[in-house]
Image 1 (tube, one colour):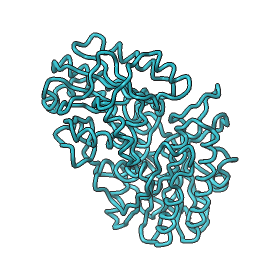
Image 2 (tube, rainbow, N blue to C red):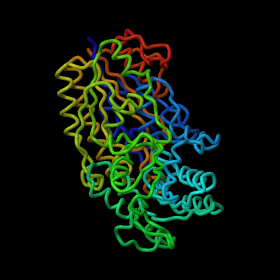
Image 3 (tube, rainbow, N blue to C red):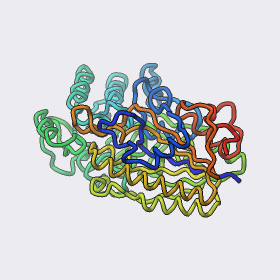
Image 4 (tube, one colour):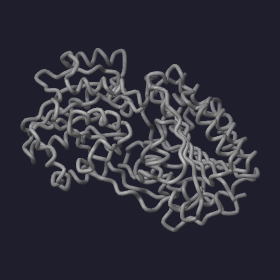
Length: 489
């Protein structure tokens, strides 16, 4: 039986531009050596190629979903935007859940990138709630500076103010950075800082634009401590709050904590036993077609391996919103995000041990593994740390390539989006956001043969069929075509 390791080098964009780029032959000689020897393909990983809006940078959700689906699946953010324009969002029966007390709190990322949420969704939700449902609305913007470029918060905040200025009974409340709101390490003491601030359980200083400007002169907005806008209100016990994330992974911890004392409405299902499906505006039906379903139909098994911070991506998103999903799962604990700068290797050692064990067991036909370092470290906007992460990931790639040769596996390596390929901008300032650059795909066939390439360009939608070909399966017609010939080895 043929076996394939699909290795996703999270955040490894491809660019020949060396400026601010940690993904180079100098930092990743094993990867670039394999690309030179075996040939490689360059895959689009942003915009319409992965179901996103034109010019929108790729992200882990759209990337892994497109890889797993083998075709383009429209992103949730586009579905929400369309529902706002058509009025379907306003007509949702979920709004009835917001009428308790007739005051609605709306909290979410003030982001222009749309990786986890869009700033526009905050004012769209406020518009529907105040104009169409006559609710008093308090908006709590969570400043980004990670997905959006650092320093972009003031202009995004000004735009939010303009959008809500003409709405009746809409005001701003708590403003804070995403560091505490978006944590997904499992360290609830971090999340409770955000929840206590939103709930008014800790005294908050008054917000002013010059206070934010002063903070931004020395740090990014992600670490901006919670402030309360003059006249603003925090959440009272029992009041309803609407969370505007269109991805659940970074909102899940804060939703779970808020739900202990408040009714929480969400745009997407957070996958929590403590929350009701009746509170979800845009439930997502699992996709019925994808690489996971093709493997199951062929009687083949799989294993998914990653750190906790990326585990939903190789399971829930890869399987097309299937909560139960396919395959065996190995989830390695992630370190707190606050420790990444001191430990850019993160939990890579534990992930490698799990992959090594899977290769030696020869049990599953497909192992899908994510190495998170280039994305998580890339968000810090420091080239020195990103280069350390790149060297660690390259050593991991070399080790796994050797393991695949030893045990007779084909290695297919790619990425889900760009990030560490540009961690410093042209002016030398930190750039910790995702990029719109393509990603590489390299195939190392079992037995040491060279792959026969059908094409050297495509998109992430071509990865599933390429894996199917490497497994000896015929890719179905609804998948984008394989990039390698069936007799590749």
